[in-house]
Length: 500
Image 1 (tube, rainbow, N blue to C red):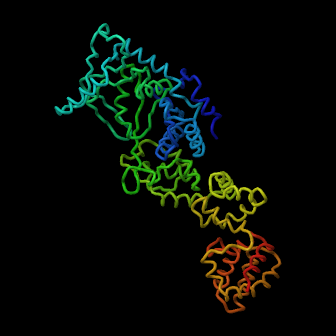
Image 2: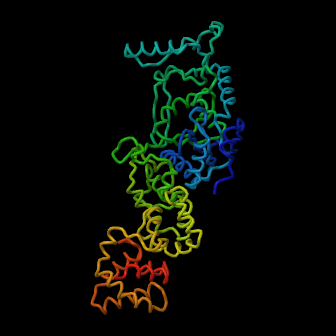
Image 3: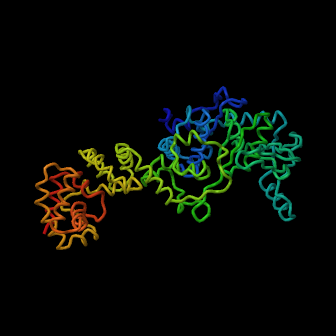
């Protein structure tokens, strides 16, 4: 279960400038502190979900702390709906965080205070160069074949020369020589020549702190010891390392995980499956199956494919993360989901179905039927249903025979099965079934087999029309289970409807 958390509105607006860092943070030999820091500009996409999962597993495995920070500084693109979707997606996945979510936007004053401290230390400077000057310098460097690094004339210039009425940006005074080295648990040792890294803007001329400054200050104040995120942030790691060093703060350990690609090797897009977590829930996937599948996109434990969450917590380590991008495969996810459906309790599956009914077409009608006494009927039918289904939607579809109204609507295959001869067979079978004493699958099977043997018929010649008449389809759970599930009165009525 998740901790009690404030509403998205409360979380964004509350003042969180003071973050009590865990007592163990940043101290050698102490338990790790990790964080997941999404931007609320949309849903919790599948790549973000995997990042959150890796952080959560690392914290659980090590007995550490998993924190949540909402990086909501882009006020034009952020929305409370997106914050709610992120929290809901994490909750559905079962990824509980420690403490309350932190709003990055609410901490802007703290970020600016750190920038002021860097100015006082001589580790940053005010830059009055207008955008036109910066662009012209970069264009000149490009035309001359040089690195497009802007070297601000204000780096070592006296502030008394500042032009009147111009609001300056604040830039980090980055080292001009040597190298910035990022030691990464996944990528190894990555070296960035400092000549290729210009003086990073840490506060814009409008007074707003930039992403890299805010991230460093927040991670430091939250006591983060390990940063686990996508490899697309690797260059940011160099920038952020320089900020840590400018403040004489300990640099966290990094683990930049490979990206997720589509089956064709191209960047993951919506056509590949780059959807929000809520979309996978609505498509009928189970959170345990999605956790298992996501962790295998980039992490391995031998040749194990089906790994329970308990095993993931016990086995997870950063050394198991590979460097190569992984490929998202719907078919593999669906097959894995089928395994989890078969191994999940019948009651839990019905609960999961009830959870998604508000999100699917005709879900309200089924919810009404379950509330009107159909829930127990669905639980009783679940053992047969879940042997064939790979998603909750397939379970719902397969269970339609339980709640169908007479006369049943037959699909084309069922119509083909119920020819004149098949209807005559059903008509001959009705008296035998009426005589069955105990309406159980075993008793019903014995009666049908006896009828088939007496008429010198193969069992399939009787069972297939029987299935079509009872369900309106050519495929269903075992037909004798179907008869037991819907009960004597309903089953006999459906058979009489189709008898010749």
